[in-house]
Amino acid sequence: MKYLLTGGAGFIGSHLSEKLVSMGNQVVILDNLSTGDKNNISSFSNSFDFYEGSILDEGLVDKLVASSDYVVHLAAALGVLNIVNKPLESIITNVRGTEIVLASANKHKKPILITSTSEIYGKNTKEFLSEDDDRLLGHPLKSRWSYSEAKAIDESLGYFYYQEKGLPVRLVRLFNTVGPRQVGKYGMVLPRFIGFALKGNNLPVYGSGDQIRCFCHVSDVINALILVMKSEGTIGKVLNVGNNQQISIMSLAKKVIEITKSSSKIIQVPYSEAYSAGFEDIQRRVPDISRIKKIVGWTPEVELEQIIRDIADYLRS
Ligand SMILES: NC(=O)c1ccc[n+]([C@@H]2O[C@H](COP(=O)([O-])OP(=O)(O)OC[C@H]3O[C@@H](n4cnc5c(N)ncnc54)[C@H](O)[C@@H]3O)[C@@H](O)[C@H]2O)c1
Image 1 (cartoon, helix red, strand yellow):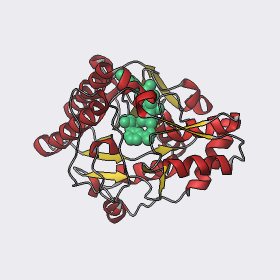
Image 2 (cartoon, rainbow, N blue to C red):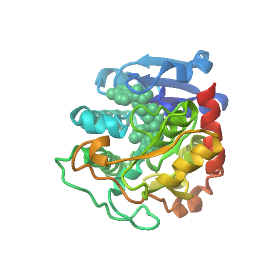
Image 3 (cartoon, rainbow, N blue to C red):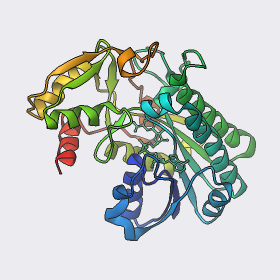
Image 4 (cartoon, rainbow, N blue to C red):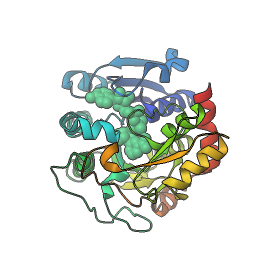
């Protein structure tokens, strides 16, 4: 199979590219390297074709989709800092870009998997969020919510291409995915904490630190994506992918310090200082993963302690 991966030089895309290559597939990567990095894919660079370009370039997208067997659409503008600071660019990439990729997949009748996000659920604080739960969002003029809005439109577009045109579309809602190659500079909490701890710098916990999150190792996520891509039962469905082992951000900071044996201290930083006045965070974000378990038999395997050790080893090296 020849897979086209948009965003294939990014964190998740590079791991998926590597896995698909190791399974004997051909891989073509389209990435504008805005948050991705060629170093992510340099260790297996003889095994794929790389195109530096944008998903907003309709001609290039169409040429690459036409010559592929399967499209995996991961390219997106993301990271809380990017979304808050460059909302327009983020909306245009995430809405128009996905529309271009989907229209081309439909024109050439190529199966497509789209990576959505748990941000979809917004402020819904349900204990375990399941795919059919409602979204609860803030004001549309708050840039904070634009990523959620854009990704929700992506899901709708994908779903209605499936329903109206019969395109084999699969939608996955990724919850916090972490592991080697993820960078902290766009606001991702775990690589930032571990990076600070390894340097002996203070770990900044925003707000109260009571926010509940869960973290899934990228190797588990890649296994989920492969199973979802291969299953006929996932066509036209949206599936949560994440780990349901939950932890507060304060406890996470403590755990990182303990596991890395760091001398760092924890400092609490108000949201207004970390982002801007009126920034709204999400109190709780834990997936119900019963649907994906039922359809493809996937559950995550890597525990949080191991995840922290893996990222620390990667950052040290
Ligand atoms: N990492 C997570 O925790 C997480 C959680 C939920 C959803 N996701 C989704 O997973 C996907 C991959 O995210 P990631 O964590 O690997 O982030 P990433 O930033 O490492 O990957 C995104 C990739 O898309 C590329 N890109 C951005 N704009 C582009 C454009 N216009 N044209 C071509 N390439 C472009 C970037 O350079 C980057 O390589 C995204 O769709 C994201 O929304 C990730």
